[in-house]
Length: 204
Length: 226
Image (cartoon, rainbow over all chains, first blue to last red; front, top):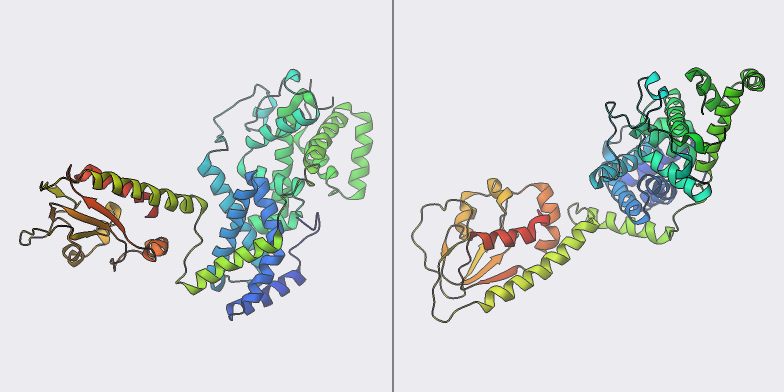
């Protein structure tokens, strides 16, 4: 993501994108190429965060642009090209994750941890990691990676896009077709689950 | 031991972390943290988690962006220039290579078993053949099979006759071709594009007879293409 914490999907950007979409529909390949040039970085960045692999991310993004190109004439609001494309990228990435089975299935019935607070709000969280499991630095990062994998999809997506990839909350809301409040809540819930799972490894 | 705090308070701490709280509310929360160690502790933990995650922003994939953009545009040009051919996924490209290699190996094996003067019989169709006069193929006469089992429903009966499905084959060549089906789905057409532009794959029939398991193998090799 090149514009960390600043909304990418502004009104001005929407007008510009709409013009390029219309031009592309009129047969100007260079207009679509401008869209590719503009969105390839954030698209690859987000797919990379979700898939953890650059080659997979490239494949997903290329497929996403192709799908966008094929469906361009069905895009009802050309000014919404950016969120629409990123939604395709996210969906394809999540599908790829599911198909390769890297993500543990999370259900409300599963309860990995013993922390009573996880049941306080009817949620599933992993249990706190034991202190000997993680010392610091790299090991803490690995523990966070493992904990991230256990998050419900939407929470993980929101946290990754917002905290790691640096998307603005408004942009994430546009991508996921939900409210900004919903994004904030998902980010919070994700952080909270990570905090609980990492338990004693964090300052206390 | 992590102390329990109210979920609403933790949500406020999360918002404070993101700078989303109005100044007045943020000040109030800071005042509370001075008095409530539990709040302070949770805020410190949330901050630690957050810093660990934001620290990863610098870890970006190294890319040749111009080359990647050109690759995307090339695939789009192919798409728009050849009846919407989709970009071939990596697994598909690998699958095509493997299928080609396996096909050659299979052809060599079958061809080497070809006997002198022996006329084995093999049924190469998956579908009951339409009533037709018994056909005795000539030596090396190609028998064309273009449809895979999953696509049989899309084949016309005339296609079956045309392609010789259900014929008994004594010897000759089985040609697996994807060129002649007229009623296959659009999706199949797209995936089939590369194969249709390539020479057909020839399988020589000899002894032992090319029976159904062998033909199944052929389609297993070609499986990903459908």
